Amino acid sequence: MYTTIQKWGNSQAVRLPKAILEMAEIHENDRVKIIVENGMIIINPVKKHKTLEERLAGYKEDYHCSEWNTGKPLGKEVW
Image (cartoon, rainbow, N blue to C red):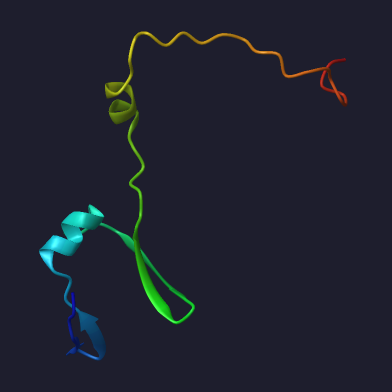
């Protein structure tokens, strides 16, 4: 897909087509990170931090935590 760089105030802008944003799962007002790598402009979505409520909503009751062996102490972990 091709587009044109256009003047926007004192800056330049590229209009991103809806189909491109949908494929990248980027929505209006989402934060993005822009980097230049090997002469290419790369736009990456910034992952939104989930709230505790959002994290707990995805909790499945079949998970049970347990202890695990991390090996013998190497320093002063145990006195």
